[in-house]
Image (tube, one colour):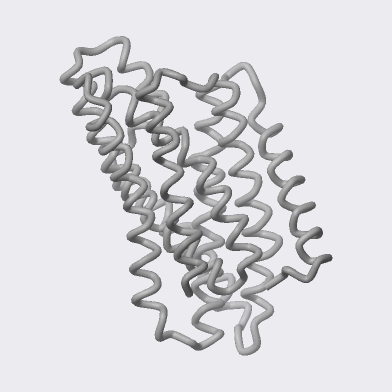
Length: 258
């Protein structure tokens, strides 16, 4: 169980990379940020639809009704949570940093930190659950989550730094959102550690696949397009799918498959 927890920790810690970039003033180009978001979406879509959901449906004792039902529960659950949360995004903060007073920037950044933290919590659960069932797929999910955590950390840290002039506070606020992801993984370990039934684990995996698909389609791909309107985010998506597909084939060929 330590390896899934370590993967969750590393994925959440990637937020600090973005935070450090934000306070050092070395902001990646919008094109790079948008491509990384599309790349993460491609990884999540391929793993969710080609690996996680089929694996869940193929578990002995799992009925198609339960499997697809849990997938839909994951989809609808994500959209429901998304509608309830504060809905400021990275590009909103970047625009705010040049158009509003520092106090307003700080308030907006705090609200975004809250929203990102609540969004990140289920991602921590997803990383842990996936890695617990299949380490190979868990590595892919951890990579995808880490990739899109970097722009999130940057989006929070840069405006907080502009508002307060404190690098420590900027990194701290950005880090809180990453810690929420780690907390999700820890709670999943505490709660699910005693649930050894393969059917229960498969049902959770199907729901997580639904969450990952919704996150990719509703959050990552539109955000990539808004950050860089002049380029098609599908390039990043297709590259993410291709790289992840090839890596899965390579891992299976050397006997690393879970």
